[in-house]
Image (cartoon, rainbow, N blue to C red):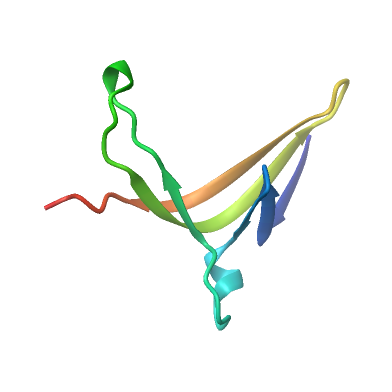
Length: 80
């Protein structure tokens, strides 16, 4: 198994950067959003977060499998 850390990563045409990489830059690209889905595919509240760490795990063997993990600080904006 091979593990690598990244400060930026591209997934399905979207580019993500960690909060540390954005420090001092004129643009900000470390926010993430996950659409909330409840029981029966009902739409529930969305969850937002700040990306702190990107880790890619590569499982050796045939076929080679890769998985990108995003460590985020999550918050729900609708909490009273």
